[in-house]
Length: 186
Image (spheres, rainbow, N blue to C red):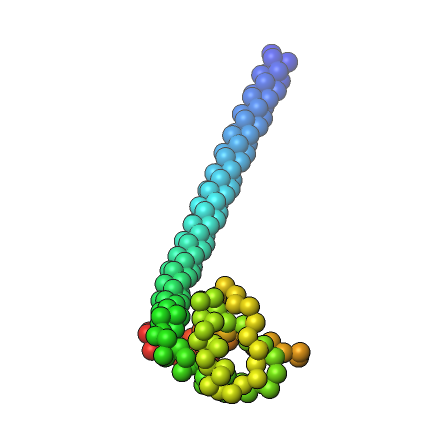
């Protein structure tokens, strides 16, 4: 029996060792599962945090874009209103009576005071230019009329002066008065 007892003792020790290995393996597997759950939770939380950050960034970007679009729309509306003021000035100039137009021509020709050159009238205003040149006693020659709404162009050897109404309003007055006009309107 001693052999049987030894074999039984070895069998018991093997079973104990096997049980201990199984228990250690279960503990190890449980530990790995716990660690994986922690990592999974950590990764999940990080992903949620990243998504929330992206959402906040997008909201901020959209808010900025909306503010810019709103400001641009407002600026565009203001610009259109200011432009309409200058358009209306041009329209009033284009609708001057012949006597007011002639007065303006006389004043402008005297202010420019060129001794030689030619004056280009707007089509349909040739007669008024001719009268204004005679009254101002200018030596400017009358050139062939061109297509523009009103005013005139003076050309000499060295210079060209664009005194058309469009040029006066949009190239001279508007740059000087646009800011003041905007301040008055807004």
